[in-house]
Image 1 (cartoon, rainbow, N blue to C red):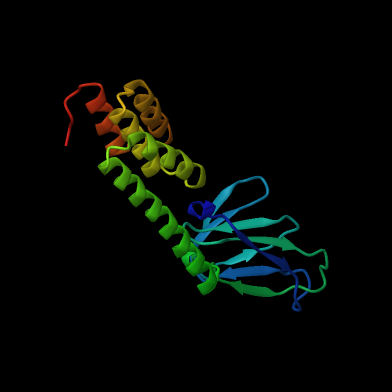
Image 2: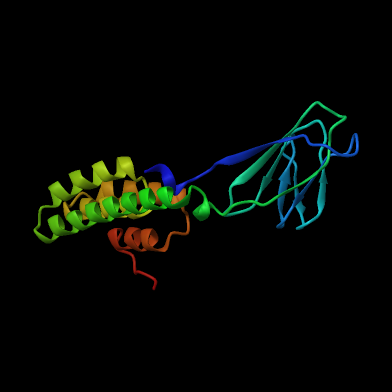
Length: 189
């Protein structure tokens, strides 16, 4: 279930027929252009981008990146138009169906953990969480793991898990609250 961090790129081989020596790409929305030296530059919608002999990457948050590789044929160039696709639209209905199935499996596992905790089977719940964390290493699962350690009376392990969360996400409100509770500090709302 590694779909939570999705990076994909669509590649253009920039070659077409037009005025010799002029190759341009026009994007239908604003984005950021990164060149081969990793220098970033904002570009506006419909602003022509001159293509050189170096590849470029065009990025926009929440969209699939576009990588452009210019072709060596300097006699056959033109202006191309492109649009970056939103991540949630990428992959079509089959991808969306698979994504929903994976999310449902994760939620079902979390529900099973909650049932085990309600039955005071904390050790079994922790085993389930450890398995789930291998497939879905997100903060919410790590917080469940820390909570199980608290319920088992293993505060040092709970603090260790929470500190790992705070390294990943220093401003995570719930992790901070849990840490304060474990350490006996007054919890800020």
